[in-house]
Image (tube, rainbow, N blue to C red):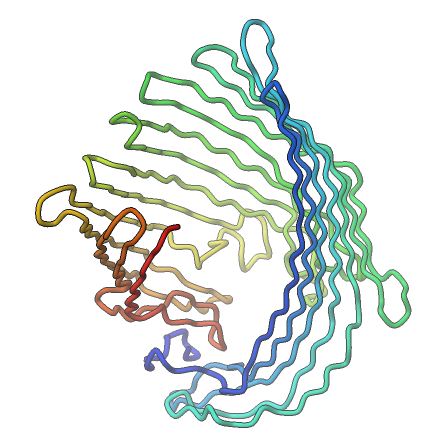
Length: 442
């Protein structure tokens, strides 16, 4: 983007980098699950999972605003990371007969541990480039990585449970919670000494919900849940800042019509999150747990089959985000400006059931997003609103064989799907795409 925040008008194929850039990700995912079904309709389940990820990022990337003549600065950086996650979970769920009604209870225990190796990054020389005359065949600079400098280990042990209570023919109540013990520790790879530690101790995280059946078609519900997240940012003394906490409230109405073939949904929500990591006003390279944000809005959707062979979906969502507590420059500002305030999704599909068109189906849809932006101080980079259209046609040869053609971004709309800053991470959306698929079922 230009220094005043205007996005540069270049072809969608333009890349602010070089061809030698690379990003490698090696991942090993091992998991196992055991289930035992009880005679009373209950279930005992154990799951274990180990995920090991190693990544290498080598990039010559934009690092400045674009001048009027198209010149900008490229920065080279190498970054390597190693992360291992282990999760173990055991729970039992069972029906419970009480006071003439059948309820359901769930009890579980879990253990989670994660270790990440960090600090293995280095920068190379900067160079100049021109966005209107890109030179992709430049050699990648020689950069020597220093090796990992720190290791952060996070663990959590938890007990959790939920009761689904059938209070009456119309009322259903859900109550549950999670009792956890979390800990995080960072140590130096050079000395083995602990450099930062967070030990928030025992935490209880509740969740409750209620569902009321208004009639045979409509049900009203409300729910409340809390959150607790151990953070990795450091304060000015080099210690991990305290965890984030928050809450989520939702209320709505769900409906089922046409013999449950058509579903409707309307909901309002509010999410609040406090003690987020924000810049320390004294030592700006450090963080404090002082941020408080809110996201709220509503959404509505209709989906299902309105007639034999005719499927529809129509949805709308409104989302507003705001900093409630933050540094002065951010007070009252939009917390997540990259989230559109308004979004609309429409789609339909019709499958012919007889006559000369038997086996054929056609469909189409549209998605609209209101404008969104990225902001740094008073500078704002805005992506305008956009609408995308798609179409599809398919033929069902028999029960096992079908072929279809899907066209996304039917009108080949040019738009930005992401904006981040003047220096980088401003991405065009995907151009028109045609997909031909042949499906065979055995």
